[in-house]
Image (tube, rainbow, N blue to C red; front, side):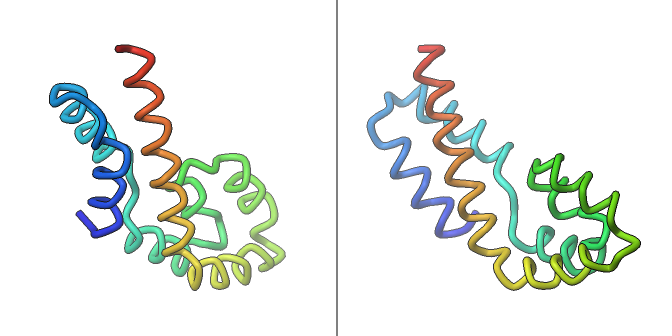
Length: 107
């Protein structure tokens, strides 16, 4: 668990009762993504969009697969690997917001 994960768990789970906080923690930890695999996917399989599939961006991943023969997706994936830390943090923040919404809906 990274410091960013701890911050998100505190930020989004602080006002929840104990049972909902535990549920939030469990669901968030199962859905969050790590930076290391995302960077490795972008560097080694980025030409076919593996990092986008890993992050759940299926449509962009399909576009990368369709155009892999042009080598443009490969160049884009190398560039994206440089910014992957921020991309994954943004993804995890969105996951935390979605999980919190689900928990509040369920009650």
